[in-house]
Amino acid sequence: MNGFVSCLVMFAGLFLVQDAAPVADKVARKPDARDAFFKGGAIPQLRIQVSEAELEKLKANDRTYVRCTVVENRKTTYQDMAIKLKGAAGSFREWDDRPALTLNSNKFRKGQTFHGLDKFHLNNSVQDETYVQEWLCEEICRSAGVPATRVTHARVWLNDRDVGLYVLKEGFDKTFLQRHFENTDGSLYDGGFVQDIDADLEKDSGPNPDDRSDLRALQEACQEPVIEERWKRIDQTLNVDAFISFMALELMTGHWDGYTWNKNNYRIYFNPTDSKAYFLPHGMDQMFGDPNASVLDMPGPIVSSTVMQNPEWRARYRNRLKELLPLFDPPTKLQGRVDFLQRRLRPVLKAIDPQLALDHAERVREFKDRLAARAESLKQQSEQEDPKPPEFDENGVMHLDGWNTASESEDAAVEEVDSGKGKMAYSILCGPSGQCVASWRRRVLLGKGNYVFHANVKTKKVAKIEDEKGVGAGLRVSGANRTNCLSGTSKWKPLEFEFSVDEELREVELVAELRTTRGQAWFDPETLRLSRKPVEEAPAPE
Image (cartoon, rainbow, N blue to C red; front, side):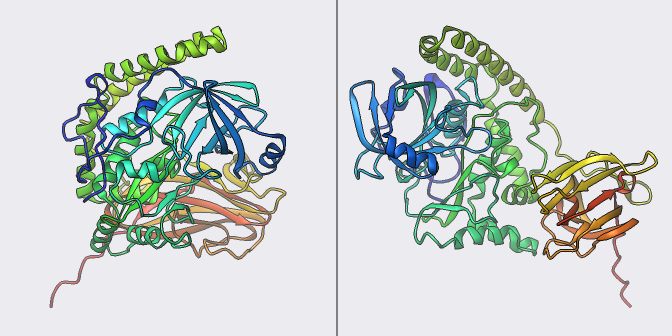
């Protein structure tokens, strides 16, 4: 049970929560050179110079480190720093724009650090006009005993071009691990972009770069078919209480783009002390967006959905929500921290552009309003009952509306169309690329039992291809393969997919899909339904 440092944040008495830290043993943390840097004071000015030759390399491959020089406050010079571009779909910008950056102090010059940091990020905050969300939410996490990187700010120039205010965040490296875990020799994985634990995640540190046996063990534990054995195996590979805290905080802060909801923006550390996985939050720059976002709905990613299916762990999760509620309610504590940050940022923004400072004040005001609305919503949700499965009719049938589109193919057309004589249908049309994996999807919460997913489907010139998930048009549930198939050209035909729910409660994602290299499929919305098979009674003893 070793591994966490509580790291309670004590700014003006903020974040004093009873039993906030997880059950992992606390480890005495020694102050390091980064403490003063992250506690406040003047916002540093960083002038980054990249030579023409190195810049040419960077533009040819922006994810590969090149050499640069960093001058801090026109006084301190760091030679041979490593720099590369970072960011995913929402935040990535080219070098000539306002790029997000990763810098490494000792990659090219061993032993060099930047305020004790081996690696740090300069985030352009294009998705957070307040510049405070990452700082605030990482602080909330640390106050609750969930390891999270520390955050400050910097004004940045790139080759004498003023690119403005950035969020400076420490990286996930050995130095970070030393602050939170007794043993730093374990495997650290980067979740990448919208990848779950069944993907070949990037391994940033740990023994044998090609060995992912610890990650596979966690995946296999979550997918163990025997329920009782599943819970035992998960408890052996995951610190469940630490994960419950991680999950609760992601949902309470509205981190829709984190692991718990979107299998994105996370790290996993396998702590050698207890041989268990710890999830670490990341990318917390789009927070509290929907003040009424549910903390009770069943999530979809592998680990979060599996943990929530265990009744005992679900009860622990509900208790944890109540324990953590004082972090958010009343909201005045969080709003006070935001005011502190705004006062610190205002002179820098005003120096860049006085209008920018005025706009920032308005964005901060809106964010504080969302914090207040979120506090009220969390208070109400903490008293609500857990979601229950929807009712089936007297015939054991549930008609399904509210379908969403999904596509792995950029040019597949997934839309509602007129399929003839005014009859609307859910259509999937293969695009010019000839690579179509696209679907209509709908989540539904189900109790233990046997079910059949039904729909009428028709196709036109659909190719029959090799695909382990399924061929042509068909029905299945997410995570399963199917044998039902409709290809070629056909009139409306009924398709079915049978499946079982072995847990007391599980959210299932229904999939009406097309996998092909050409053609089109239509699904009849009026026939998309779920039926519950009667429970077979055991024969009476003779």
